[in-house]
Image (cartoon, rainbow, N blue to C red; front, side, top):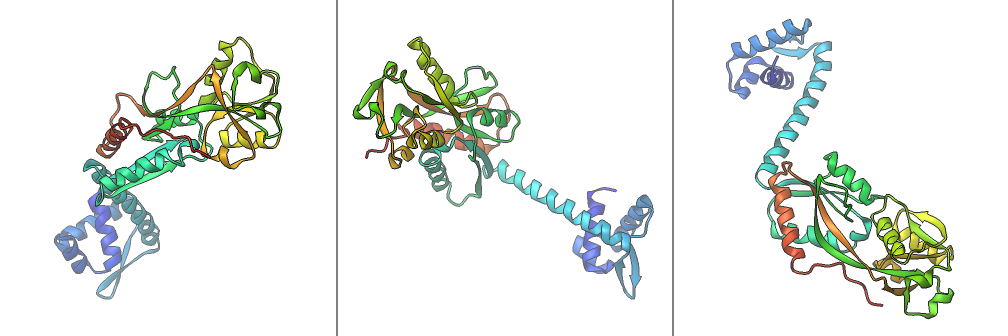
Length: 304
């Protein structure tokens, strides 16, 4: 049995007439009859039975027909997807940190689609509770084509291309002793309990490095995975936090303080597997992102 035989079977099942089905398939009726007979011999059951001048599916034929239709539909969809990818169209699977989902990633996608208007390009997006570690694992498992995340130094299989930057700030409740300040040194935060990010977050090793520079570490009240959640806990008085200056901070009941020493600017990267094949549409998006970010497409701080 081969794919041609499978298509012959499905067409005959739909048309229920040998001559008409053969015409539609652009083959002779004997060729079609021989193919169906060969399938029945191989399977050991009858697939069709005569119904006047027509034919109809047997009980076994009906079961096989449903599966054959599903197989051919999925195969045709896969073949079409590959053909689209081969000519610079198709689907791009992207994972990104949620903090990049309000500005950087949407702008890049919109710009790329505008530049490629008329092409069939779809973006499959992953950002719900996705951390840098998850993104890098997904890249290595080939679940994603591209990731937008922080950089891990111990990832030799992954290429990191800088695309955006973001300041780190200290956020405190509005009635906190530090709230009367506009800027702070990291040493000034040590007397207070702090909310820090879990180790799977790309921010954790950055913040740990900052405290290592002053040879001290604060008392930790909670470990949180996402910056939005950390900000929410600060707003409700569970501690202070070092966090990226993201738009949501300016809508919460917190005071945002500039971190002046040691200063740090968080950088974001486009991450891709090295030395593997990427379809043309993915390569084109990569080139587009590099061109845009060279024109200083950065993650801007929102003024209040």
